[in-house]
Length: 478
Image (cartoon, rainbow, N blue to C red; front, side):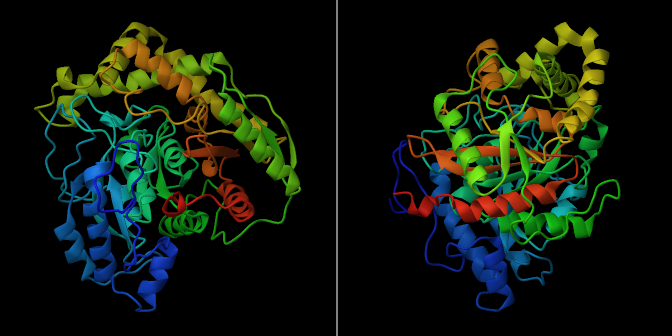
């Protein structure tokens, strides 16, 4: 399919072409700019043209700000990704742009200043084309809405791109930009990375600069980061973020440039603590990844889950708590026009669920905080734990739509996102890698967790796997 045609919803779409961006990752584009082979203006114009070509199919942009991007392109840039185009997820503040949080329940005004994390993100030298879309308040695992077009997966437009960083992931996977901001409160970096065939690293708690709202949470589940198409881009971004802000409570990552030499003890978890078993395709993909790791010389064995069924209940209650806080404080937090009756079925359902469980809050918070220690105990024996990123293959759009009843939708979400929330509650790092594909030709990812502060081991292993089993590129998919 050409990138200027009107695709069917069962078709794929991408924007890769012979322009200033080519098929390079962010590192490659930055090198072209530094060598003066291309200018920042040229790559910005190319990214805008790509966005305009695929946006009618993907719907990944919440707030395009192309004129500002072109103005920024004329200014000097410094940093590891100086001049590289990007997008920023629409739940953090960028000066002069509204922060709508994917919600139709209020009308956001332009932010007065960049948020603390956005300042860290922009310090890498990137040029933002605008804001990317997310489901309402980032609560869902699919970027779908009550009364608006969903974000589509570029690998197959009939399928979900994941969430909540679904807009960012769709734009990176389709070739509009090589790197995009994403954040993760229950899997929202790793889930869309898995759905769109990208690298998605959720950093350790405290690794990057927290935004103001992140710091107010009783359990700090949100991590800021990126989605990329290559391990080296993720590794370079993490090193640059560390140069901007180094948390003395965590071991340094430094720049990781290739595979490690140490053979690792790797535990394998195939089924989650939810009542839903992992589907057959996903199960086979995890075993295939385990076999590859063994062939590479790592010691691989089955491992137990560090938490039980009560974790699912507690995390779901906390999920509801977040919706309850927004629903009851939206006018103060988001603006006087906030109307909680205009929130979607998922937000309203989560808030209502929490109201019934509000008395359990102290015990829930205690147990979620305790997962830090329970998670760390696993890594007394293992260097890394391998699992699925998601418990079943990517669903079609509509399967996780917020237009359906809350109880049905919520059960589906729990079954789908069974593996990722533990890293948010515990604060441990994890990376999703698109090592396999489904029978439908869609990406199928493996998930790797490490001890607190050990992103370096994850990146070294990711480099090794990327070299041993390179993932398919969308521009070569057909």
